[in-house]
Length: 620
Image (cartoon, rainbow, N blue to C red):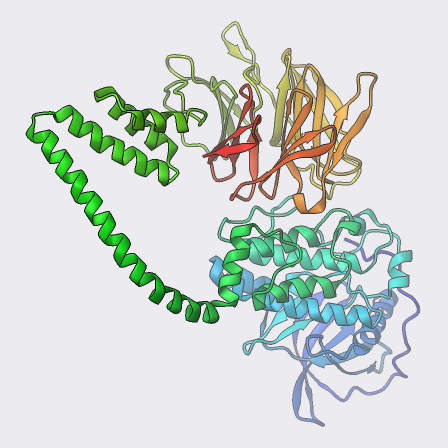
């Protein structure tokens, strides 16, 4: 990507003179010049010497400007400039520290598992603190990436290559794209004025690459492993928001959240559950708690002895009763009594399915008020129903239709649609590069006309699919939050004719869609819920707060809208307001289906929870 508009006039760097350094081998070359090892005979040390390409006036201006911007920054994590000048031909150069380590990109490649990559987060923190200092001195970097962060053998961190650095005033007036694809912010790609929050976005992408091990080939964030600390994932999502207004306001705020994670403090970007807060409290106050616990144990020991005697006596009585029943030949009553005891224990342990099965087994043998009480206790709980049995292939990603009749299975280079109701699991295969696929109904994506399968070949792999009344909607994987100006989807009718559907998300990607006879619903990357209007156009249903995350699953229940977010939040919106808010332990909610007053919710871990929409409770 180009460097935007030309920099202001560079300093003169003195008059041409004989260079005192003895030049060594070339360390690197680029379009603007080269970096060579050099020897300083006056101080007896090795240095790195960067010089502009011969005869290139633009390169000379850029290098002189880079030397001046870097030299004004005096920070232990910023590459120091020792000296600058011009050689006998007038070509500008400057000498800097010769750093013997590797860059962060090489360190990430070498770290093949999460544990060594987490040790690299300290380099991201040091780089962020250096960038925060540079911002305080009125300098923006504009090209932060792992290759420009150097790591030393003894824990050093150096932010290098300030060739695109400028002042905030110059950045605000700059025109044209600037930075490195994959790390530059959306506004940098758009070629409009930027500020310090563009550097915050780049720091977030560097942290994302450290946590995931690599960035996707398409613009956007990677999918993080479940073992990655959720607090650091929250930092990445906050720093890499598509809109600058939704990011950290400064590199200092970003570095403070990363430092809080290191020190075991609460991270501002993360929404903590009650369980997480309790675990954190225990870690911080573990020594006082241990002392207090010893005292509690001493007091409880005496109580425990008495309770133990009571429990032992009750168990002996129950065994005696069972033995007496068996001795009288009443085997059915003995078994029923044992099953009832197990059912009551399962009910106390909050295992409703086991409690129901055991209580039903007891009641089938002997009439018992206790067994009927257990069954009544769980009469409203969820029950599994076998829809069909079919052999299914191993899928990279799969999605089941609401009725269980169709399974959509994605592989590396194809998508399979299986009719599970057919005796031999009827299959339709489409050759296409598939990433993540969601399926929202019972009408297949392919027509079987005279025994043939109608083929559907979009220009990119589908990531969102919804349908209603023979109409489908899909988006390609290239439609990410960074693709400003290209937010367009496609409709596919069952006769195979494609159409164009302009999505209403104001320059951000559609992350979820739902279609029925009442109209279309869309969840946007800017956390807005939109609906289509009968007369054309769209209206906003709700604006989710930042802490609730991005909506990635959506459905309609009567007049209410059901939403699942990237952070594992479940919301029921009534007239645009949150009537119910629930949180799952998992990170992401993949889909929300409807079955009367209950909604099966599927998570990215493959778990299914049943949402009772009448009383707002979850099972599973």
